[in-house]
Length: 143
Image (tube, rainbow, N blue to C red; front, side, top):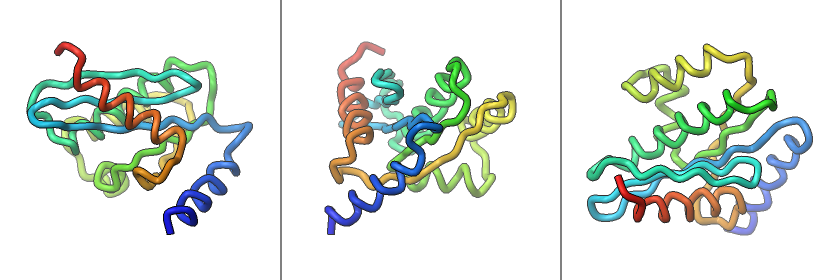
């Protein structure tokens, strides 16, 4: 049930509390507009992407921006939470496209500890809901 999925995820996330900063990412596409957002430490960063950007690219771009914010942070250990199974899969498989290559380069250039976790979408998980809303709001930003 959705309640069980949410409970299981929140239980997993609670194991990280205190020593790991969760970072939620999401992409959004509506008609020709695309955007993405990241939610980190009570802040939401939104990005309007070029028209006709695919949802897959929007999700990867959100992960890339999350890593850039992580590199700027004074904290050391992070958990990137994405509801894009396909974006996480390409990162895990080692296959590269332009954005995946940039993500790998940024990860290897830092001493930060960065883990990834898939998050079920639209299950009421607070950080994911915030990133989802931010990505939708980004659609109305100017390019």
